[in-house]
Image 1: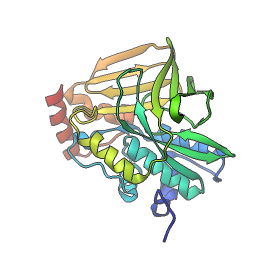
Image 2: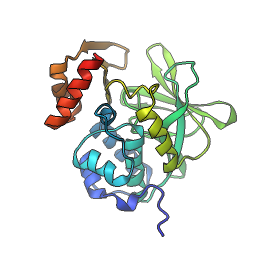
Image 3: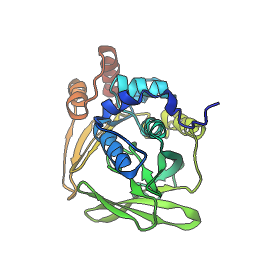
Image 4: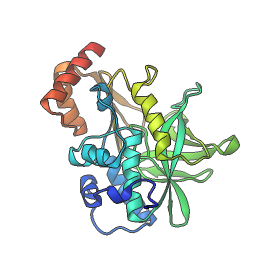
Length: 276
């Protein structure tokens, strides 16, 4: 019986690496981890369109590979970080799952609904997360109290609170802001099945009623939330405009490299018009 947790043996690793544009040799070291993380973020956008299209969000590795590698779509945290975990496991890394409460500067206590990863490289544990969307990490960050790093033109830090809780923070134009709080316990694929069910079906989930599509770049964060397309830069400046029903498919293609077939585009436009 395989000891695999993330089903890395079922992944077509060559196809995944081609999808994210990773070239060269790989080893289970920090240099490879950084390169894979950075390439994944650049290539695969955050999106919740399966939910909006009324389809189940599947987390088995074959479905994830079909969607994000073969069909070149994006996904949200459980999809993206599960795919990354399988790839890293296949490369020889030690990968553990994490659960987090999204804060996004809110003081409201939210449930544990975000997936991130802890990966060992060069004798240290690193927070890896390719599925947080617009304000997410570009590269791994040390899971070490007080760690700070510039990534592109963005800056991230790691804080610590009571009972072993760690907090990922980002530096905005008005100071440090909490992104999410990470619990100390390991999480496993079965845990994400439950989180995914809530996130993709519960009326209070932010992902069931409107499209959420995001892409982080070294000097720009682009988001489409509902009908509002926003570009944000490190100095806090932003540009916003409304996206009409008739241009939605083209915006997804040109701004986020998401291609939908005719049936998907028609369904999304119908749902989109009802929501906007």
